Every structure is written in structure tokens, then in C-alpha cells.
Image (tube, rainbow, N blue to C red; front, side, top):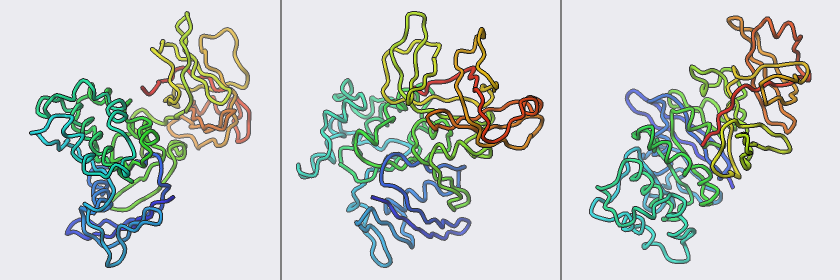
Length: 354
């Protein structure tokens, strides 16, 4: 199942002109600077922007030529930057608003499931006016899910929240597409949200789609727009095991293991590690008697030209997952690094995205 969309919208100082075909599954991040057209594209998909184009979800047509399905007939959930809850209703009343209007046969998820996924049980009797910003967004997402949408559209749902509220919601959003069995289109300009949630990235600029990459492809390019002041980043997917008595926690993936130095409260079956390229050194052999715990074999796939005395090196680990390292140009020359060469990645620090 694919989603195929093409829209053209002309305004006085802005033109949206996009054409895309994507799998109808997982999380697709629409990423780019403010004003590049992310929200306009999302609103066009929802039918909130009348513009020329087409939109097909599998065999179902929502827009094509002269045919235009109005928003209220499209099976979608939409969550805005500011949660638009019904202030006269309780949390339970907001959740039940769309759910009660669905025929029982059309309900894909139960109230109990959504309440559990989003941690809403303690809030059910509260009025919307009694909730914090993060709590309101959780309720808005729950209300959207309970309409059993074929498509869930999230327009920068964390942008208006403080750091603590973001920390509370991000873990709840992880894996939501798989649990709810609904594809998500997620608008953001925050690289950390893309790294944590996305399966693929639609890079937008000036109303156009510049590139569509899987998350791994997006992070494998040295000029990726996701890289900010911290520089290049790699994301490794795996699972977190039980912490050992000495404080180490294993992060395993396809027979390989990285050690986390901080205990984790409970095992996590699906997790991502964030590794800065500047925290990865290279060696031609494994090094004994050093404090660096994580040393993994790696095959080099590309050595980029030196810039300001630094060289970015791309490689793949034993399971095929990509890893980037940033070393000095002098070290790259001393090690005679070339594509296809076998080296060891010495990973000095990792961050568990939880």
C-alpha cells in the first residue's frame, strides 16, 4: 500500500509544488525550515487547503482532477501545534467524541488501548482547562486515534511545549504507528524528533521536495540538513537488555553489542542509540587495556575529502547498519583509510534515545 500525492498551490509570495509516492506505513517526517511548506502540504493532504493535485491512499482516491473529497469524509486524524480540545468536556468526553460517532465495526482500536498507550488513565475525569500543555497534546493525539483514521497527521505537536513536556511525550510517540496500525505524517524542524521517531524523511525547501530518504540514508550524507552544530550523527537500532551489577547495560542488535554505562530501569524491545561521529575513533586493530568499552568491527564505505583538517568516514557494522566517524586528516592519512578497508570503531559515548 502506497500513498501517492501531488499538489500545486500558488500564493502571492509562495508556491507549493510537490509530488511524492511513499509506503503507507510507519512515520514519515516532513522536515525543513519555517516557511518551507511543511504545514501547507499537511493541510493539503487533509483537504484543508483547496489546491490542484491528487491524493490516493492505496486504491482509495481522496482527490484527483475535479474530484475533491471534503475533509470531514477523509478518514484521517489531525493534531495541531496547539491542542484544540473541547473545553466544556472532560478528558474522557474528548476521547469519546469521535469514537462514539463511529459504527462499532469501524473501530480499529479500543479506548482502553489508547488510554494505556498515552498514559491518560489518571486524567480521565479532568477538564481540558485543568491540563498542562503536554497533557492536552496527549489527549488530542488519543482523540485523533480513536476516530480510527487511515492516516494520522501531526503538525509540530511538540513545538509549543517545554523541555520536560517533550521528554514525557516523545517516548509515548515511539512505536505509535505500529501499535495503532496507522501511518503517521509528522511535521517538524527539530532534528532530534526526526532521529527518534521517523522511518523516512521528506526534506522540503521553498515549497518543493528536495529529497526523500530513509532515516539511515538521511544520516549517511555528510551534508544532511539534520546535522546541526553537533555535526554528523549515526542512529543504531536495537534493544536494551537487563542492567548488570557493575552498572553496564547491553544494547544488542543482530548479534552485536554496545555497552551503555548508565543503568536502564527496564528492558526496551525497540530502541535507538544516537552516536556523534566526533565520538567515534578508528583503529586498524582492537585495542586491549583501554577504557573505551565499545569496539566494533567496521567496513569502510566512503572516505570524504578533508575539511578544516577533519575527515568524515562512513562505514557499515557487521549487521549492515551504517556508522559515521570523524577523525583528523592526519589520522586518516596515517591509517591509509580507503573504501573497503576493515577497521575497528572505538565508540567513546552513546546516547539512548528515551
